[in-house]
Image 1 (cartoon, rainbow, N blue to C red):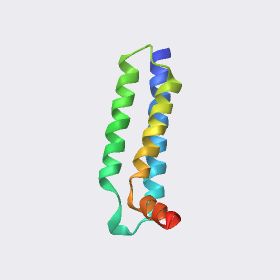
Image 2: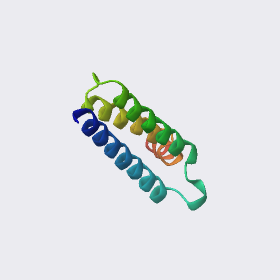
Image 3: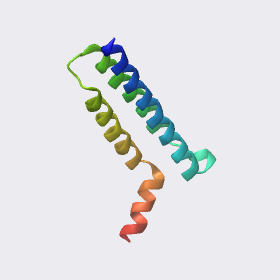
Length: 91
């Protein structure tokens, strides 16, 4: 029961962070410039984290959530709006 509950919590966080990423990118980009590749990588990464949490009982829920949160930030850093913002701040 505890294993299933932890996996469900990680899955809920994965869905929430992925939805937040998609909404933020949709709001920040034009209609034709949505970063589908980064979104796909985020979905696949979320599936991998959830499956690892399901397979290994030693993995804490907070570790899995933290790993996926950092992965989401990494994916967001390599999207076009963020790169353009960094270019603007640097120059």
